[in-house]
Figure 1 (cartoon, one colour):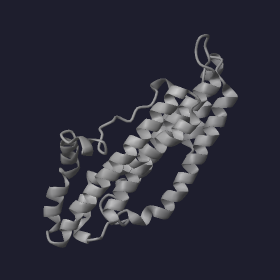
Figure 2 (cartoon, helix red, strand yellow; figure 1 turned 30 degrees about the horizontal axis):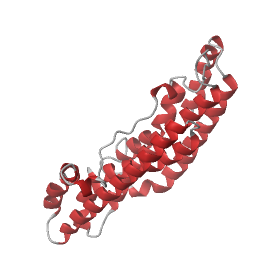
Figure 3 (tube, rainbow, N blue to C red; figure 1 turned 90 degrees about the horizontal axis):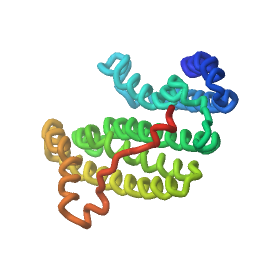
Length: 240
């Protein structure tokens, strides 16, 4: 958590030299720090969903990687100095730049939170217990990330003041939501094989299942309306 204000302090002299918006930058830093603080509090309460302290992957493994994924975006934005916006002649206004950055950060943070949530739900899945591999990897991270992206895109559409960005992000949110629901349904169906098959067999079938779904969707129009391949895109200039 201390890395965010420290990065802000280090970038402030450079921002002054560039005549960037110092007050606006520190307001963004405060908001990102609050996000990290809330995330840390939530992580403290959900840490029991991850492997036990003495289990492989807890110390410096799953738990640490999950936290770094979730807080990585604001750390990158502050560490790169992107919070200190510089308005040049011909560029968009500072308010528009801030809105674009907040929208981009929201999309990426929601996507990463969704991915971690999907992995956690998949690992804790026990209906049946032997079916959890189908809900874990890669299915868990796929439907979780896409569901998070859908939420982030919808929130980003409300944040941005560009009509074109609003329409695009709203359309992307609907597409990601449909695809996430389809992958989750696929994983739930495959996981039910755990009632009859051992864990290794469920894992063998569950591993390619989401990718097979994308291939099949490309050949059938009706399914293709629900399963669409779209990249999660945010304006690069909004991040730095």
